[in-house]
Image 1 (cartoon, rainbow, N blue to C red):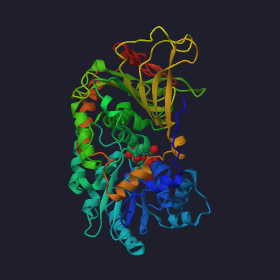
Image 2 (cartoon, rainbow, N blue to C red):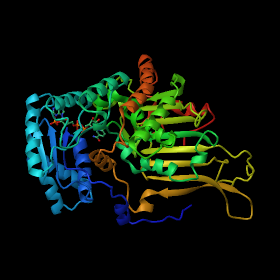
Image 3 (tube, helix red, strand yellow):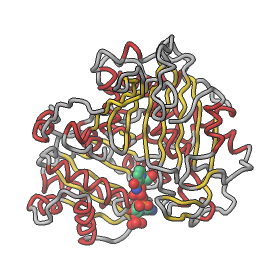
Image 4 (tube, helix red, strand yellow):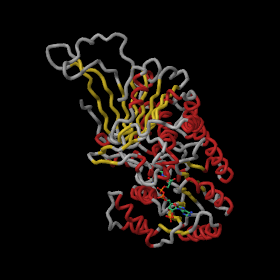
Length: 511
Ligand SMILES: NC(=O)c1ccc[n+]([C@@H]2O[C@H](COP(=O)([O-])OP(=O)(O)OC[C@H]3O[C@@H](n4cnc5c(N)ncnc54)[C@H](OP(=O)(O)O)[C@@H]3O)[C@@H](O)[C@H]2O)c1
């Protein structure tokens, strides 16, 4: 079923998304600049901001990494930007942008390197009029976060009397509760909390921000968004890809740390939080933390873990996790996790939140679905259209975070014809169709917000510690009882059977 949609032109979107403030002059300093993230996401995102006229005029980028690179670095960044698409290679704007991209080779533990970096930044301040404004971006492996922050502090680069100095820290932020607390302490020794931007790129996605607009800019959903009307909530974050050669990283991470502690918990808080008093960082973070703190300690019987074996993905045979490069052939690392959460507050008591995240699943899909209770009396239960619908199905609002970003509502409709037959149909809102543009990758919005000092879409120290407090006991329980049935799902499947059983026991099933 199609909806009537108001189509908004890209020019309207450009106008409506113009920020009230333009960032102050600054240099973006990326640590780990020869890595994958910088080339694939960060530089393309910065250039998109430049194309949209959202960067300050007085602006430069300095990439920092170990390898001695100079022109090759600019060349590599150019390649990354062009690969991102929508860029004319001959555009003079691209040439001018790249002319402001510099590189500094050093080892992260080399004090001398920081002194030279400081001098370079001061020279560039004079050249570009950036006036001491800094946005440090730690796009490195997490073991370097504390070292870099400490060195920035020791070399007087964490503060400026003239301009804002901020730091973005990539995920994963900590490995468990204790290490997250320790890292928070180390970071807050050098940077005040309002200078710190812990990034989760999911929060930059339009569809995630739209959860708040959907809930709080419409009058019709909020009255039914509670235990009186909602039967349960499901959050799925599945990927069809495997670990993409990142064996050593994934062996230490696993699905709980890699996806559930951050992305999934963020999505859950957006769905479950109370309306904030304003759309600002502090009230939103307060409401999110209240949700996480209301989640009951998780029992082992509310958890399922899995690891993929060999199988077929997109028609091609793929190896099992234990046969991936640089993975222990007897690894107990989970590549799938499913959990049942209970949020004990007035809004959600008694409404289970089922979440699952996995690699090498049948399809790539991140979706939240809110399943509503059935009407009190099933008036049409004997009039289901034969062959088309097998049962009366409950209303579901599903929010697709990726791909095909959008929102749909499932409801029953009468099948045309002389008899009274009903069948579920869908009302569908699709981002790309409605707005004529597909949503950006998230880094644009987050980089711009950080330059503007807006921390609304970044994790606060309290939030990070609240989510680790929930996940850490589960990690410990799993570590103390090694799984006996791994691998327990085939690559390209819907995950382990025990995940289906988790819902079946409550008389429910995954979507
Ligand atoms: N890649 C993604 O799509 C993605 C997505 C979300 C989050 N992240 C997070 O972003 C961070 C970076 O990921 P990545 O994939 O870009 O990593 P990566 O490709 O492994 O790059 C690591 C970077 O760190 C530099 N480096 C390592 N050790 C160094 C040292 N001792 N001194 C100086 N430089 C050093 C490397 O420089 P050399 O090459 O010169 O040694 C390289 O530039 C990680 O925290 C990751 O979890 C990545």
